[in-house]
Length: 286
Image (cartoon, rainbow, N blue to C red; front, top):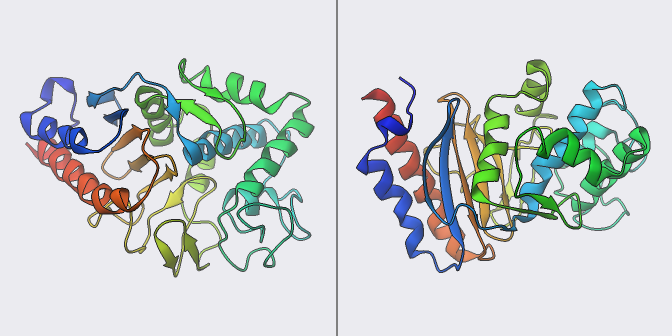
């Protein structure tokens, strides 16, 4: 059975209310599935910077560009030997910031804002449409993300709300803007076996990633929780927000806050995500 708002129980409500104890001025959470929103709590309409969750929207715009034929995953992009695909899955060798490679392409998973800025430049050049306009027309407008705007870097510049991030999550769960085959490539491990550092969570070997979304895989510790299945995917942001999708169970969770990522998030996010997962699956089985 698919959980919907008519099946919304006190058990799930009590879990969502845990965010009330987080020391943030803005905090909102929404659980969604294939049918849309299941449950929400907090200030879900307040717009704040969501930092690197931006990369999911940027990746989707690039994948739409690929499907339209404007560019290809194997097109050269970034350092010599790197491609659009390398940039999407943080395997180009570029550092977090800067254009001087610190590894050869395909050797390490190096999380890179610069790589995503390059992706936006390539898409803009290929389509002759400013990236912000392309993102708006190809991703934000079709998903009715009416409270979301890009102010700054395609790697980390979105301002958004919990409701809008959940709408993005719904697209990542049930794609409407890209083909199912492209979605499968984006949400499964690309260039398997690469090790790397997951920002805030330390060295991971391996450190699996898709074409935009981070893949949980065997990472430990991990922000999606102790009990998250390895195929769980999503992204979190340095300004205290996250989005994860459990496609196998058919649901996901979006959290938006205005409290910068830090030890508090490491302490509470995994348990919170596990509690949401347990409550949702219990309802599904009920």
